[in-house]
Length: 125
Image 1 (cartoon, rainbow, N blue to C red):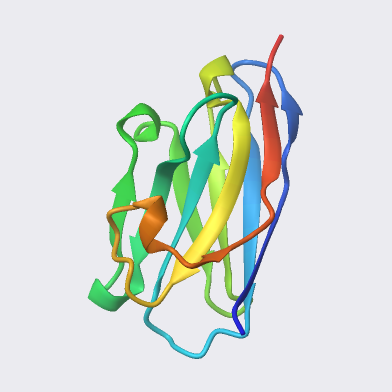
Image 2 (image 1 turned 60 degrees about the vertical axis):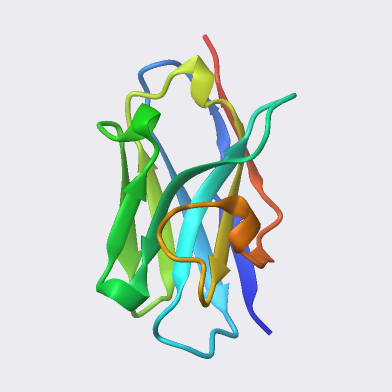
């Protein structure tokens, strides 16, 4: 059974950086989709950044994070990190990692079936 676990959340000031890490285990395929989502209080869960390993690594980034966030994949450790720079208060929320065999890179939450517990990111002065 696939298992997904996030780590690395915390409280930071605007303009600072933070790295979230997602560890996968129990994966039975080399080709799958994996990504990061976030949910702010009172808002729906939205896709932040996803990668589809079936298509050679097609990437998706939400428009609001394109110039500030990046993905770092460690194949040996089976982890996917989200490097977040120049953080803004509107980046605050619970960040989730998710994986799926067929979700693609469109970063649509409803297409992912394996989720972590989430980690809180708070950006505040």
